[in-house]
Length: 149
Image (cartoon, rainbow, N blue to C red; front, side, top):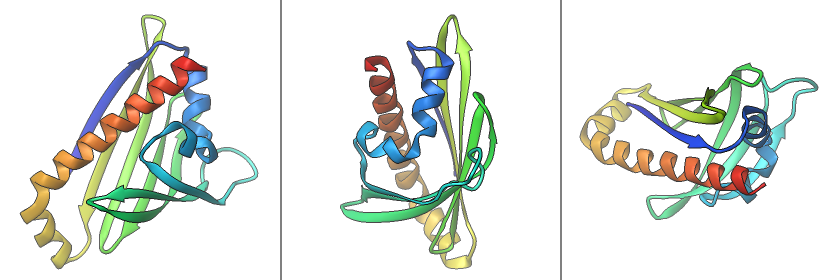
């Protein structure tokens, strides 16, 4: 499952980057995050940063542990999460657009076992639609936060 969504933010790249890389403050920026705990903060840079994020998903609270696997300052970072036989990767990237910043989230989910592959095949469309809504809402929340700062 691949999902990509973008939003243009009326702020410089540095301001958007500062907001999206301050993971410990996401709970105040993104409405969908109910709780967030940083598990590991690397001494330098973003790679290896690990946190647990709790959201309401399909009517119940769900906590995912995520970590940053790749990053290029002011350009992008990639996260990974694994849960119940599924692997989730997300790339969050920035591009300049006429003095503004385009923020793009690219989500990829894959199943690691036969049961998860069957569930994904059956529920794929519903899950994809729900994930797209979640990503678009997160992007809107980030935009509002950065533009008000």
